[in-house]
Amino acid sequence: MSVSALRSSVAGRVITPTDVDYDEARRLFYGGMDRRPDAIAQVVDPGDVARVVTLTRDSGTSLAVRSGGHSVAGHSVTDGGVVLDLAGLRAYDIDPAAGTAWVGPGLRAGEFTVAAAEHGLAVGFGDTGSVGIGGLTLGGGVGYLSRRYGLTIDDLLAADIVTADGQLVRADVDSHPELFWAIRGGGGNFGVATRFQFRLHHVSTVVGGLLVLPATAEVIAGFLAAAAEAPEELTTIANVMPAPPMPFLPTDYHGQLVVLAMMVYAGEPDGADRVLAPFRALATPIADLVQPMPYPDVYPPEDENYRPIAASRNLFIDAVDAGTATMILDRLRASDAVMAVAQLRVLGGAVAQVPDTATAYAHRRRRIMVNVAALVGSPDELDPHEQWAADFAAALQNGTTGAYVNFLGHDGAARIREAYPSPVWERLVDVKRQYDPDNLFRSNLNITA
Picture 1 (cartoon, rainbow, N blue to C red):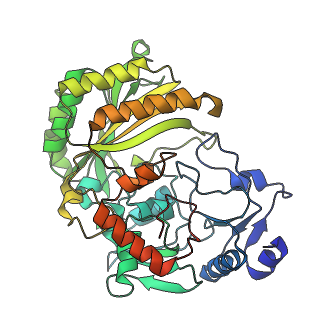
Picture 2: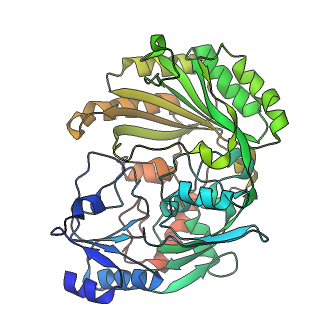
Picture 3: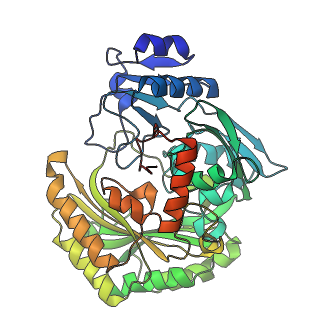
Protein backbone atom coordinates (compact mmCIF):
# COMPACT_ATOMS: atom_id res chain seq x y z
CA MET A 1 0.00 0.00 0.00
CA SER A 2 1.40 3.39 -0.94
CA VAL A 3 1.75 6.16 1.60
CA SER A 4 0.15 8.56 -0.87
CA ALA A 5 -2.97 6.38 -0.98
CA LEU A 6 -3.09 6.41 2.79
CA ARG A 7 -2.64 10.17 2.98
CA SER A 8 -5.35 10.80 0.40
CA SER A 9 -7.81 8.57 2.24
CA VAL A 10 -7.61 9.69 5.86
CA ALA A 11 -8.30 13.09 7.40
CA GLY A 12 -5.68 12.63 10.09
CA ARG A 13 -1.94 13.04 9.73
CA VAL A 14 0.21 10.27 8.26
CA ILE A 15 3.78 10.18 9.62
CA THR A 16 6.61 8.44 7.74
CA PRO A 17 10.32 7.87 8.44
CA THR A 18 11.18 11.19 6.76
CA ASP A 19 9.17 13.22 9.30
CA VAL A 20 11.06 14.86 12.16
CA ASP A 21 8.69 13.45 14.78
CA TYR A 22 8.73 9.90 13.42
CA ASP A 23 10.85 8.51 16.27
CA GLU A 24 8.62 10.09 18.88
CA ALA A 25 5.49 8.78 17.15
CA ARG A 26 6.75 5.19 17.08
CA ARG A 27 8.18 5.17 20.58
CA LEU A 28 6.71 2.70 23.07
CA PHE A 29 6.42 2.80 26.83
CA TYR A 30 8.79 -0.14 27.19
CA GLY A 31 12.37 0.32 26.07
CA GLY A 32 14.59 -1.96 24.05
CA MET A 33 12.32 -2.10 20.98
CA ASP A 34 13.18 -0.43 17.69
CA ARG A 35 10.38 -1.25 15.28
CA ARG A 36 10.08 0.95 12.22
CA PRO A 37 6.67 1.11 10.56
CA ASP A 38 6.34 2.43 7.03
CA ALA A 39 3.59 4.79 8.15
CA ILE A 40 1.77 5.90 11.28
CA ALA A 41 -1.81 7.01 10.67
CA GLN A 42 -2.98 9.35 13.41
CA VAL A 43 -6.70 8.94 12.88
CA VAL A 44 -9.26 11.54 13.93
CA ASP A 45 -12.59 9.69 13.78
CA PRO A 46 -14.15 6.25 13.18
CA GLY A 47 -14.30 6.95 9.45
CA ASP A 48 -10.52 7.30 9.40
CA VAL A 49 -10.23 4.04 11.29
CA ALA A 50 -12.45 2.24 8.78
CA ARG A 51 -10.45 3.60 5.84
CA VAL A 52 -7.12 2.51 7.32
CA VAL A 53 -8.52 -0.94 8.07
CA THR A 54 -9.87 -1.28 4.54
CA LEU A 55 -6.68 -0.09 2.85
CA THR A 56 -4.40 -2.38 4.85
CA ARG A 57 -6.73 -5.34 4.40
CA ASP A 58 -7.06 -4.91 0.64
CA SER A 59 -3.32 -4.38 0.12
CA GLY A 60 -2.17 -7.14 2.47
CA THR A 61 -0.22 -4.63 4.55
CA SER A 62 0.53 -5.51 8.15
CA LEU A 63 -1.39 -3.47 10.70
CA ALA A 64 -0.72 -2.60 14.33
CA VAL A 65 -3.24 -0.75 16.50
CA ARG A 66 -1.98 1.63 19.15
CA SER A 67 -3.86 3.17 22.06
CA GLY A 68 -1.29 4.12 24.70
CA GLY A 69 1.72 2.10 23.53
CA HIS A 70 2.01 0.03 26.72
CA SER A 71 1.98 -3.42 25.12
CA VAL A 72 4.52 -5.52 27.02
CA ALA A 73 5.49 -7.31 23.82
CA GLY A 74 5.49 -4.14 21.71
CA HIS A 75 2.46 -5.06 19.62
CA SER A 76 1.51 -1.37 19.39
CA VAL A 77 4.13 -0.86 16.64
CA THR A 78 5.06 -3.04 13.69
CA ASP A 79 8.21 -3.39 11.58
CA GLY A 80 7.09 -2.19 8.19
CA GLY A 81 3.37 -1.86 7.59
CA VAL A 82 1.06 0.66 9.18
CA VAL A 83 0.39 1.74 12.75
CA LEU A 84 -3.19 2.88 13.36
CA ASP A 85 -2.68 5.41 16.14
CA LEU A 86 -5.84 6.07 18.19
CA ALA A 87 -4.37 8.89 20.31
CA GLY A 88 -6.60 11.42 18.54
CA LEU A 89 -9.80 9.67 19.62
CA ARG A 90 -9.92 11.42 22.98
CA ALA A 91 -13.50 12.66 23.21
CA TYR A 92 -15.60 11.73 26.21
CA ASP A 93 -19.20 12.35 27.25
CA ILE A 94 -20.07 11.87 30.91
CA ASP A 95 -23.72 11.56 31.94
CA PRO A 96 -23.64 12.08 35.73
CA ALA A 97 -27.36 11.43 36.15
CA ALA A 98 -27.18 8.07 34.40
CA GLY A 99 -23.78 7.23 35.87
CA THR A 100 -22.35 6.36 32.44
CA ALA A 101 -19.81 7.74 29.99
CA TRP A 102 -18.74 7.29 26.39
CA VAL A 103 -14.95 7.42 26.18
CA GLY A 104 -12.50 7.39 23.27
CA PRO A 105 -9.69 4.79 23.30
CA GLY A 106 -7.01 7.46 22.84
CA LEU A 107 -7.49 8.80 26.36
CA ARG A 108 -5.12 7.69 29.09
CA ALA A 109 -6.51 6.12 32.25
CA GLY A 110 -5.35 8.98 34.43
CA GLU A 111 -6.82 11.62 32.14
CA PHE A 112 -10.31 10.19 32.19
CA THR A 113 -10.09 9.50 35.92
CA VAL A 114 -9.50 13.22 36.49
CA ALA A 115 -12.42 14.14 34.22
CA ALA A 116 -14.82 11.72 35.92
CA ALA A 117 -13.71 12.87 39.38
CA GLU A 118 -15.13 16.31 38.65
CA HIS A 119 -18.52 14.59 39.03
CA GLY A 120 -17.46 12.41 41.98
CA LEU A 121 -17.41 9.38 39.68
CA ALA A 122 -14.88 6.77 38.59
CA VAL A 123 -14.40 3.58 36.65
CA GLY A 124 -11.68 1.16 37.68
CA PHE A 125 -8.76 1.09 35.26
CA GLY A 126 -5.24 -0.19 35.90
CA ASP A 127 -2.46 0.94 38.19
CA THR A 128 -0.69 3.33 35.79
CA GLY A 129 -2.20 6.62 34.70
CA SER A 130 -0.44 6.75 31.32
CA VAL A 131 -1.92 3.47 30.05
CA GLY A 132 -4.23 3.85 27.07
CA ILE A 133 -7.84 2.97 27.79
CA GLY A 134 -8.20 0.93 24.59
CA GLY A 135 -5.74 -1.90 25.20
CA LEU A 136 -6.32 -1.96 28.93
CA THR A 137 -10.07 -2.43 28.54
CA LEU A 138 -9.95 -5.06 25.82
CA GLY A 139 -7.62 -7.25 27.89
CA GLY A 140 -9.65 -7.05 31.10
CA GLY A 141 -8.39 -4.22 33.30
CA VAL A 142 -7.05 -5.09 36.77
CA GLY A 143 -6.44 -2.11 39.04
CA TYR A 144 -7.07 -0.20 42.22
CA LEU A 145 -10.85 -0.70 42.31
CA SER A 146 -10.93 -4.34 41.24
CA ARG A 147 -12.03 -5.91 44.51
CA ARG A 148 -14.64 -3.20 45.02
CA TYR A 149 -16.13 -2.91 41.52
CA GLY A 150 -14.52 -5.66 39.43
CA LEU A 151 -12.42 -5.45 36.31
CA THR A 152 -12.71 -2.62 33.80
CA ILE A 153 -14.67 -4.95 31.51
CA ASP A 154 -17.22 -5.53 34.27
CA ASP A 155 -18.27 -1.90 33.83
CA LEU A 156 -18.17 -1.99 30.03
CA LEU A 157 -21.71 -1.52 28.71
CA ALA A 158 -21.03 -1.20 24.99
CA ALA A 159 -18.32 -0.51 22.44
CA ASP A 160 -18.20 0.80 18.88
CA ILE A 161 -15.94 -1.48 16.84
CA VAL A 162 -14.56 -1.26 13.31
CA THR A 163 -14.32 -4.86 12.16
CA ALA A 164 -12.02 -6.33 9.50
CA ASP A 165 -14.58 -5.68 6.75
CA GLY A 166 -14.38 -1.96 7.49
CA GLN A 167 -17.82 -1.79 9.09
CA LEU A 168 -18.58 0.14 12.29
CA VAL A 169 -20.77 -1.91 14.62
CA ARG A 170 -22.15 -1.41 18.12
CA ALA A 171 -21.38 -4.37 20.38
CA ASP A 172 -23.38 -4.83 23.58
CA VAL A 173 -25.57 -7.49 25.20
CA ASP A 174 -28.22 -7.10 22.50
CA SER A 175 -26.24 -6.23 19.37
CA HIS A 176 -23.37 -8.49 18.30
CA PRO A 177 -23.43 -10.19 21.71
CA GLU A 178 -20.70 -12.72 20.87
CA LEU A 179 -18.39 -9.92 19.80
CA PHE A 180 -19.23 -8.07 23.01
CA TRP A 181 -18.37 -11.19 25.01
CA ALA A 182 -15.06 -11.61 23.16
CA ILE A 183 -13.79 -8.04 23.51
CA ARG A 184 -14.13 -8.31 27.28
CA GLY A 185 -10.80 -10.06 27.76
CA GLY A 186 -9.95 -11.25 24.25
CA GLY A 187 -7.81 -8.24 23.38
CA GLY A 188 -7.65 -6.53 20.01
CA ASN A 189 -8.20 -9.67 17.95
CA PHE A 190 -11.62 -8.80 16.59
CA GLY A 191 -11.54 -5.17 15.49
CA VAL A 192 -10.61 -1.63 16.46
CA ALA A 193 -12.57 -0.09 19.32
CA THR A 194 -13.37 3.54 18.54
CA ARG A 195 -15.49 4.25 21.63
CA PHE A 196 -16.41 2.59 24.93
CA GLN A 197 -19.44 3.08 27.15
CA PHE A 198 -18.69 2.55 30.83
CA ARG A 199 -20.78 2.35 33.96
CA LEU A 200 -19.39 4.79 36.55
CA HIS A 201 -19.34 4.51 40.33
CA HIS A 202 -19.54 7.14 43.03
CA VAL A 203 -15.92 7.42 44.15
CA SER A 204 -14.49 10.71 45.33
CA THR A 205 -12.16 10.38 48.30
CA VAL A 206 -10.33 7.13 49.01
CA VAL A 207 -7.84 6.22 51.72
CA GLY A 208 -4.76 5.22 49.82
CA GLY A 209 -1.04 5.44 49.39
CA LEU A 210 2.14 3.49 50.00
CA LEU A 211 2.72 1.25 52.99
CA VAL A 212 6.31 0.00 53.16
CA LEU A 213 7.13 -2.98 55.38
CA PRO A 214 10.25 -5.09 55.90
CA ALA A 215 10.35 -8.06 53.53
CA THR A 216 10.34 -11.17 55.69
CA ALA A 217 8.59 -14.41 54.87
CA GLU A 218 6.17 -13.84 57.73
CA VAL A 219 5.31 -10.31 56.59
CA ILE A 220 4.75 -11.38 52.96
CA ALA A 221 2.53 -14.34 53.87
CA GLY A 222 0.72 -12.28 56.49
CA PHE A 223 0.13 -9.40 54.10
CA LEU A 224 -1.49 -11.63 51.50
CA ALA A 225 -3.61 -13.39 54.10
CA ALA A 226 -4.80 -10.03 55.45
CA ALA A 227 -5.56 -8.79 51.93
CA ALA A 228 -7.64 -11.90 51.20
CA GLU A 229 -9.60 -11.47 54.44
CA ALA A 230 -10.10 -7.71 54.02
CA PRO A 231 -13.46 -6.36 52.90
CA GLU A 232 -13.83 -5.88 49.16
CA GLU A 233 -13.52 -2.12 49.57
CA LEU A 234 -9.75 -2.64 49.92
CA THR A 235 -7.54 -3.43 46.93
CA THR A 236 -3.80 -3.92 47.41
CA ILE A 237 -0.77 -4.34 45.17
CA ALA A 238 2.29 -5.60 47.02
CA ASN A 239 5.71 -5.28 45.38
CA VAL A 240 8.50 -7.29 46.96
CA MET A 241 11.58 -5.47 45.72
CA PRO A 242 14.76 -3.64 46.71
CA ALA A 243 13.84 -0.34 48.30
CA PRO A 244 14.45 2.48 45.81
CA PRO A 245 16.17 5.66 47.02
CA MET A 246 12.91 7.45 47.72
CA PRO A 247 13.24 10.47 50.02
CA PHE A 248 10.72 9.11 52.53
CA LEU A 249 12.65 5.84 53.02
CA PRO A 250 15.55 5.73 55.50
CA THR A 251 18.86 5.41 53.67
CA ASP A 252 19.66 2.22 55.62
CA TYR A 253 16.89 0.48 53.68
CA HIS A 254 17.92 1.63 50.21
CA GLY A 255 18.63 -1.49 48.15
CA GLN A 256 17.24 -3.83 50.82
CA LEU A 257 14.24 -6.01 50.06
CA VAL A 258 10.99 -4.47 51.27
CA VAL A 259 7.27 -4.90 50.70
CA LEU A 260 6.28 -1.71 48.90
CA ALA A 261 2.49 -1.90 48.85
CA MET A 262 -0.07 0.38 47.27
CA MET A 263 -3.26 0.40 49.33
CA VAL A 264 -6.59 1.78 48.08
CA TYR A 265 -9.61 1.67 50.39
CA ALA A 266 -12.77 2.78 48.58
CA GLY A 267 -15.18 2.52 51.49
CA GLU A 268 -16.43 4.84 54.19
CA PRO A 269 -13.35 6.80 55.38
CA ASP A 270 -14.09 6.27 59.06
CA GLY A 271 -13.69 2.51 58.54
CA ALA A 272 -10.25 2.71 56.98
CA ASP A 273 -8.14 2.49 60.16
CA ARG A 274 -9.87 -0.71 61.21
CA VAL A 275 -9.38 -2.29 57.77
CA LEU A 276 -5.73 -1.24 57.56
CA ALA A 277 -4.80 -2.19 61.12
CA PRO A 278 -3.90 -5.84 60.33
CA PHE A 279 -1.34 -4.69 57.75
CA ARG A 280 0.23 -2.13 60.03
CA ALA A 281 0.45 -4.78 62.77
CA LEU A 282 2.56 -7.12 60.63
CA ALA A 283 5.69 -5.12 61.44
CA THR A 284 6.66 -1.58 62.24
CA PRO A 285 6.16 0.22 58.92
CA ILE A 286 9.27 1.63 57.30
CA ALA A 287 7.00 4.25 55.75
CA ASP A 288 3.26 4.80 55.99
CA LEU A 289 1.89 7.27 53.47
CA VAL A 290 -1.66 5.90 53.49
CA GLN A 291 -4.07 8.80 53.89
CA PRO A 292 -7.33 10.24 52.53
CA MET A 293 -6.89 11.52 48.98
CA PRO A 294 -8.94 12.31 45.88
CA TYR A 295 -9.19 9.13 43.85
CA PRO A 296 -7.17 10.50 40.87
CA ASP A 297 -4.19 10.90 43.20
CA VAL A 298 -3.71 7.13 43.24
CA TYR A 299 -1.96 7.76 39.90
CA PRO A 300 1.28 9.57 40.79
CA PRO A 301 3.17 11.70 38.26
CA GLU A 302 5.27 9.67 35.84
CA ASP A 303 8.64 10.31 34.27
CA GLU A 304 7.93 10.61 30.54
CA ASN A 305 11.49 9.51 29.77
CA TYR A 306 11.22 6.27 31.75
CA ARG A 307 11.52 3.34 29.31
CA PRO A 308 11.92 0.10 31.30
CA ILE A 309 13.52 -2.93 29.68
CA ALA A 310 12.39 -6.05 31.49
CA ALA A 311 12.18 -9.81 31.40
CA SER A 312 8.86 -10.71 32.98
CA ARG A 313 6.32 -13.46 33.52
CA ASN A 314 2.70 -13.36 34.66
CA LEU A 315 0.79 -16.11 36.44
CA PHE A 316 -1.93 -16.93 38.93
CA ILE A 317 -1.51 -18.75 42.23
CA ASP A 318 -3.96 -19.47 45.02
CA ALA A 319 -1.93 -19.08 48.20
CA VAL A 320 1.41 -17.91 49.61
CA ASP A 321 2.54 -19.57 52.80
CA ALA A 322 5.79 -18.93 54.67
CA GLY A 323 7.65 -21.46 52.53
CA THR A 324 6.52 -19.84 49.27
CA ALA A 325 7.37 -16.42 50.66
CA THR A 326 10.86 -17.62 51.55
CA MET A 327 11.29 -18.92 48.01
CA ILE A 328 10.21 -15.53 46.63
CA LEU A 329 12.84 -13.78 48.72
CA ASP A 330 15.53 -16.29 47.73
CA ARG A 331 14.76 -15.91 44.01
CA LEU A 332 14.86 -12.13 44.22
CA ARG A 333 18.19 -12.19 46.06
CA ALA A 334 19.61 -14.53 43.41
CA SER A 335 18.97 -12.04 40.63
CA ASP A 336 21.74 -9.70 39.51
CA ALA A 337 19.35 -7.52 37.50
CA VAL A 338 19.26 -3.77 37.96
CA MET A 339 15.96 -4.38 39.77
CA ALA A 340 14.13 -7.64 40.50
CA VAL A 341 10.50 -7.54 41.58
CA ALA A 342 7.70 -9.90 42.54
CA GLN A 343 4.34 -8.14 42.38
CA LEU A 344 1.45 -9.81 44.21
CA ARG A 345 -2.17 -8.77 43.70
CA VAL A 346 -4.86 -10.40 45.81
CA LEU A 347 -8.02 -10.68 43.72
CA GLY A 348 -11.42 -11.96 44.82
CA GLY A 349 -14.13 -9.55 45.87
CA ALA A 350 -16.13 -8.21 42.93
CA VAL A 351 -13.81 -9.90 40.41
CA ALA A 352 -14.96 -13.31 41.62
CA GLN A 353 -18.64 -12.40 41.73
CA VAL A 354 -18.98 -12.43 37.94
CA PRO A 355 -19.84 -15.80 36.36
CA ASP A 356 -16.90 -17.57 34.73
CA THR A 357 -18.60 -17.61 31.33
CA ALA A 358 -19.75 -13.97 31.33
CA THR A 359 -16.59 -12.58 29.70
CA ALA A 360 -13.52 -13.83 27.85
CA TYR A 361 -11.44 -13.04 30.94
CA ALA A 362 -11.57 -16.52 32.41
CA HIS A 363 -9.82 -16.49 35.78
CA ARG A 364 -12.56 -15.24 38.09
CA ARG A 365 -11.78 -17.69 40.88
CA ARG A 366 -8.02 -17.31 40.95
CA ARG A 367 -6.93 -15.66 44.17
CA ILE A 368 -3.56 -14.04 43.51
CA MET A 369 -2.08 -12.57 40.33
CA VAL A 370 1.72 -12.49 40.23
CA ASN A 371 4.16 -10.63 38.00
CA VAL A 372 7.85 -11.39 38.32
CA ALA A 373 10.23 -9.07 36.51
CA ALA A 374 13.92 -8.34 36.11
CA LEU A 375 14.74 -4.86 34.86
CA VAL A 376 17.98 -4.50 32.90
CA GLY A 377 19.98 -1.75 31.26
CA SER A 378 19.86 -2.90 27.62
CA PRO A 379 18.17 -5.55 25.43
CA ASP A 380 21.50 -7.38 25.10
CA GLU A 381 21.28 -8.30 28.78
CA LEU A 382 17.83 -9.90 28.62
CA ASP A 383 18.53 -13.58 27.88
CA PRO A 384 19.73 -14.80 31.30
CA HIS A 385 17.04 -12.76 33.02
CA GLU A 386 14.36 -14.23 30.77
CA GLN A 387 15.45 -17.64 32.05
CA TRP A 388 15.40 -16.37 35.64
CA ALA A 389 11.86 -15.06 35.19
CA ALA A 390 10.67 -18.27 33.53
CA ASP A 391 12.18 -20.46 36.25
CA PHE A 392 10.78 -18.21 39.00
CA ALA A 393 7.30 -18.34 37.49
CA ALA A 394 7.44 -22.13 37.05
CA ALA A 395 8.44 -22.58 40.69
CA LEU A 396 5.52 -20.42 41.83
CA GLN A 397 2.98 -22.04 39.51
CA ASN A 398 3.97 -25.52 40.65
CA GLY A 399 2.23 -27.17 37.71
CA THR A 400 -0.88 -24.99 37.61
CA THR A 401 -1.73 -22.86 34.59
CA GLY A 402 -3.21 -19.48 33.81
CA ALA A 403 -2.11 -16.03 32.67
CA TYR A 404 -3.54 -12.53 32.20
CA VAL A 405 -3.20 -11.34 28.60
CA ASN A 406 -2.49 -7.70 29.41
CA PHE A 407 0.69 -8.70 31.24
CA LEU A 408 2.00 -11.27 28.75
CA GLY A 409 5.11 -10.39 26.79
CA HIS A 410 7.32 -12.59 24.62
CA ASP A 411 5.97 -15.75 26.22
CA GLY A 412 4.96 -17.63 23.07
CA ALA A 413 1.74 -19.13 21.76
CA ALA A 414 1.48 -21.71 24.54
CA ARG A 415 1.20 -18.99 27.15
CA ILE A 416 -1.52 -17.24 25.17
CA ARG A 417 -3.46 -20.50 25.29
CA GLU A 418 -2.90 -20.59 29.05
CA ALA A 419 -4.75 -17.30 29.31
CA TYR A 420 -7.90 -18.97 27.98
CA PRO A 421 -9.20 -22.36 29.16
CA SER A 422 -10.20 -24.62 26.25
CA PRO A 423 -13.94 -23.79 26.12
CA VAL A 424 -13.12 -20.06 26.20
CA TRP A 425 -10.44 -20.44 23.53
CA GLU A 426 -12.79 -22.36 21.24
CA ARG A 427 -15.49 -19.72 21.62
CA LEU A 428 -12.95 -16.97 20.90
CA VAL A 429 -11.83 -18.83 17.77
CA ASP A 430 -15.45 -18.96 16.58
CA VAL A 431 -15.78 -15.18 17.06
CA LYS A 432 -12.46 -14.66 15.25
CA ARG A 433 -13.69 -16.71 12.29
CA GLN A 434 -16.82 -14.59 12.10
CA TYR A 435 -15.27 -11.13 12.45
CA ASP A 436 -11.66 -11.50 11.25
CA PRO A 437 -11.29 -14.74 9.27
CA ASP A 438 -8.09 -13.60 7.52
CA ASN A 439 -6.42 -12.49 10.77
CA LEU A 440 -5.89 -8.87 9.81
CA PHE A 441 -5.70 -8.05 13.52
CA ARG A 442 -2.70 -10.19 14.35
CA SER A 443 -0.26 -7.73 15.92
CA ASN A 444 -1.44 -8.76 19.37
CA LEU A 445 -1.61 -11.79 21.62
CA ASN A 446 -3.10 -13.56 18.68
CA ILE A 447 -6.12 -15.81 18.58
CA THR A 448 -5.94 -17.67 15.30
CA ALA A 449 -8.96 -19.08 13.51
